Length: 319
Ligand code: F6P
Image 1: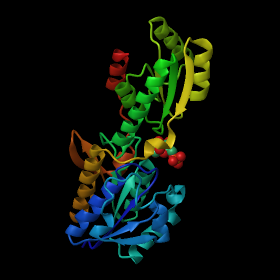
Image 2: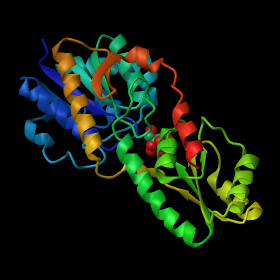
Image 3: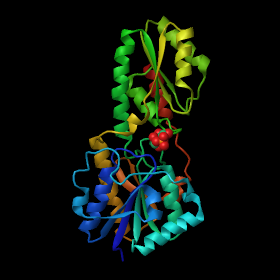
Image 4: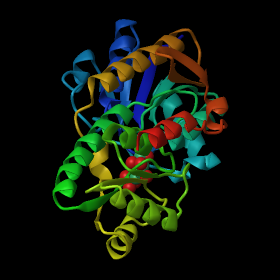
């Protein structure tokens, strides 16, 4: 019998997490299930930092970025003793099931809780779009919009000044934010984990583009692949462009979620509770071909990343 569920957000926050919390809360309460919000992810869970939620507790949060529950990373959640502590806290507080919203680390935590007998559903909340088995994660669309807005602005000024903007975007070793923004902004060069980094080839391409009459260039770089400041100064030295580096940083994680993220989060939050009502746990919710589905969390965390070859081919065709 499902009487009470907990909901938490964990890892790096993402726009749309609040819409997911709202959907979980309202769907559960409409079905006569109590809801507690858990502060600061798995950290709040082991500390017993619980807030009883009513329908009104989640009013007016849909348009807000970040997460009203707070978030944290807890690397110790891999340890058996820490997971056991979480299981005990859930039992002590009569919480029968859990909905966790976050990225890869959050999914691993949910997998571990599932293996310790907790009915757990995971929702993909991360700007990185690096959760396998789902076409999109909650927050990706908003972050992409933020990046596109920033790069469009950089493009205006770089074309006035015959410059090359080298822009670092987030992604945590997943190139999706880079490839989607690269296509959207008509960037000249992309550097991602999938393309790899060949400094000489990048500089040669910039020289070639300049010879072709380009008066500015945009290079989009996925974080953790190369040093954008270093690349920008090399661009100034060896090409006719003046290089300027911009690291977009955490600005990509903030802001009001786009309608797409709000709808995605609402659909996923509702599905999570539907699964728990059916007595199903150990699943993560995903969107595939615009259909909300679920799959095993264990399977998801062990899946390897699908290549975005078609997107890279498209990018190359359009430069
Ligand atoms: O996973 C989301 C993300 O924003 C990544 O893109 C980035 O690598 C990381 O989190 C940054 O983490 P932090 O906010 O802890 O610096």
